[in-house]
Image 1 (cartoon, one colour):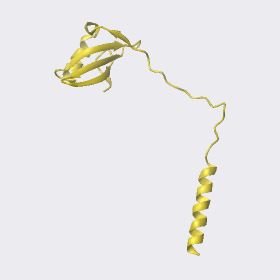
Image 2 (tube, one colour; image 1 turned 180 degrees about the vertical axis):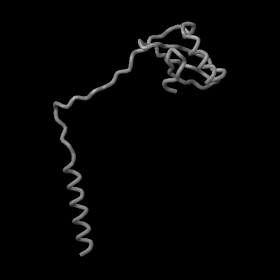
Image 3 (tube, rainbow, N blue to C red; image 1 turned 135 degrees about the vertical axis):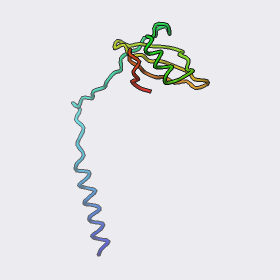
Image 4 (spheres, rainbow, N blue to C red; image 1 turned 135 degrees about the horizontal axis):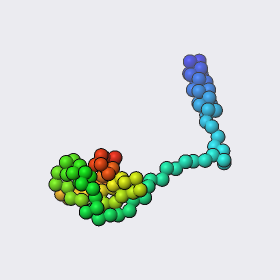
Length: 98
């Protein structure tokens, strides 16, 4: 008898969870944030605060490539020894993503 009652509770609980699922309407709109495009710049065009922040955070890092977007945010491709990484900085040398 206990198994029957427990089974009924499990079945009813499962049915109630399925009833809470909202249907997807064909008129549903999804919003996608597109990241600003970066354009490549020469390593010499990178501002001094960005280079200083790079050397402070990653001593001995070599700046391989640099990119900038409309917001003056820099995408830096660096290498430290045999490891490569991409870091992001604003024009003042503040890290956005590491």
